[in-house]
Length: 371
Ligand SMILES: [Cu+2]
Image (cartoon, rainbow, N blue to C red; front, top):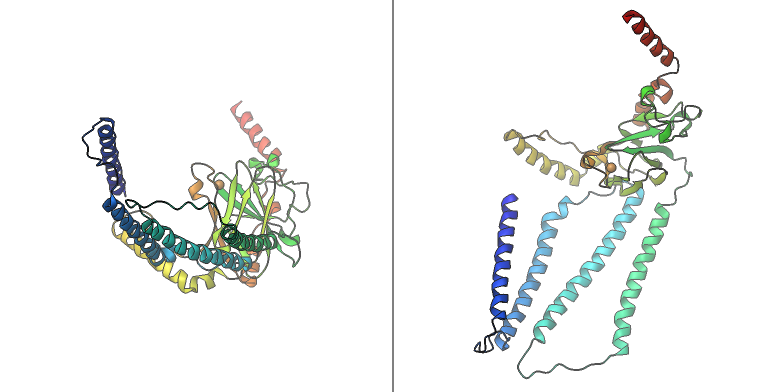
């Protein structure tokens, strides 16, 4: 990669020097140059052919990219609304691809056909209402259709309500990690505020200890979700703008200090089911081939990779932003129940008030011992 960049820089420097010498030549007012700087018919023809070469290059690189890079795209969506998002994206891409293929061919063909020729004059053509109407109305209809369809899909996705008994989960962002909080037995999150954070008492998310809903809240570092149940996420940030990005579920929402943002989706595939998908099997195989090579060379980051859903931060929030992530496990309702039953509640993990005088007593005892 470094070699490639160095080469690119050298080529660019060479081009720059060449261009500068040309400018210098041009600035030397020469009268005997026999019009060498004015394009003749053969120059124009050659440039016309180069347009075709460029067209072949564009089409070639498009086909190459499809062939080579399609497999690095995200796998099929793992959430209910994700299927709609993907379909909308696919239709948009097909339309763009179709229009781009035709217009590029026309553009380059006309560039060649009407190249400069000695004695040829450009036709003066003021306007044509019918033509203008056609090339205005077609994009208007297509774009309006896409936008309306997109708005409709977006409104559906962002209609976050409490119907269908959703699981309520808080995603808490801070530089540079994620924490998740479940509502516990009552599925209601206790009030929280960064001002109430008390590290000494293990109240890391600033839960309001006076709120009865907070006591049974469950704070975890790995997100577990039961398959097929709607999840309503409530996002908070402690410090700067973060963005909760769950690519496999086609979900992303900013986490903004001082406010709660929301997103909702229903996972439709368990982690285990996703691992069985041919696309994922292929991806894992390719990654592990690279990792095996790294292992053979004794390099870091070479242990075999197993697919997992992931929550990433998608806002450049600071130096360790790249590593701000949390594992997501989608499992059956039974597996989820078993997991959540093992987790401790906020009331269990919080350091109780009694501990404070105890701490003071120890301190007092120490002081007494020194005296
Ligand atoms: Cu972040």
